[in-house]
Length: 410
Ligand SMILES: Cc1cc2nc3c(=O)[nH]c(=O)nc-3n(C[C@H](O)[C@H](O)[C@H](O)COP(=O)(O)OP(=O)(O)OC[C@H]3O[C@@H](n4cnc5c(N)ncnc54)[C@H](O)[C@@H]3O)c2cc1C
Image 1 (cartoon, protein in one colour):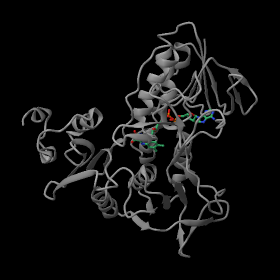
Image 2: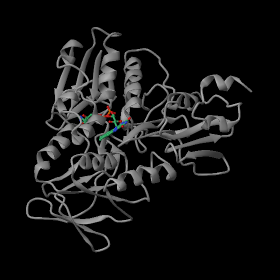
Image 3: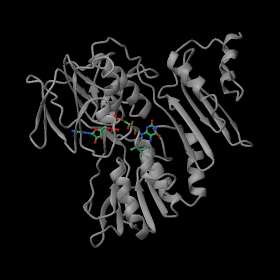
Image 4: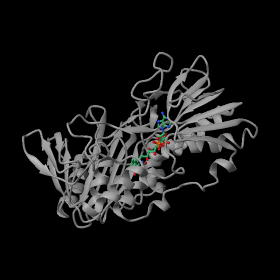
């Protein structure tokens, strides 16, 4: 059996690790355009903060490929999948045939349109190479501009602030992390950041960057100019799917997969940030581009590629973020669209700096936000995942002492 895995991120690595114990004879080829050993992508922001060195990033030993008898094709980018010919073709023209294929190509930073993007010191923040580039530039950087208040933009701004750099954050909505946190938690995050000196500008975009060779100014849509020695574009990500033939493989935002993570083409699977699965809380298709889902999807896809029939239970957005001394946990739907279907209850304790919000669809918990005292995050996330009916008073879930035993009491 010829297995080919496109992408050596956590989804690809997990898939290879679950194929090998089931099929000891099959040939596994992993094609990845990064040459760094498989690493913890979320931790690159900690490298930017200066909290860890890049030597802490690898998630597997240097012998990973050898130990699992994997043929690595690194520094190689797939440019085409020939579905009928069951072949993957790289940009260098190498053709690799497959019986089972996993698309685990992750996501690419969402590009922006602006002049001067080729100037030095303008970065995305997706790979360890991006952060290495930023670290090299840091000694000459006093002021930085970060575009986008999503998870990556926010982490970039925080990381640069930890390095003592003056940071301006341009965001479209009124608060950062608008996809992860609701308005109340977002406001708390914003206050934390601005209290530590972050300059936040809302409703503005960059039309151009200028400077001699390297960036020195950003020109904004209101006609103003912002001096900056470094800029980070953190406007979200898009599934990395440019090489996927849409006349053969069904795509929406991501690659569409069934409950077994197989695409509409038998033998071709997808997992991780590139895959569009069923979101448990939303009950609809969604791309949940988060690490734990990429890991779980990769593991299950790998087992199914090797002939097992393991059902994937669906994905759930969730995140834990620490900003200075504040912890934030979010899971599921945190900003419900329609009041008719959802009810939301919340509580705030200014004395302890806590905020809690629960979102229900009828008698099921579908979303939670906890700011500080986040210990029950695991239980609440499990309740969302299981979709078990909540038969006790809903307000009891707001209690910082809430525990699973309370669910039994009427
Ligand atoms: C700064 C940052 C912070 C994050 N923080 C969090 C967090 O706090 N919590 C959380 O859950 N998630 C976080 N994430 C998201 C998390 O890192 C991703 O969900 C996870 O890495 C996805 O894994 P993956 O294997 O699907 O894709 P990736 O990790 O993107 O791996 C895909 C690999 O495939 C390669 N590839 C792509 N296209 C091709 C091609 N055509 N040919 C060959 N190779 C290709 C890519 O270069 C890459 O190496 C963060 C991400 C970033 C960038």
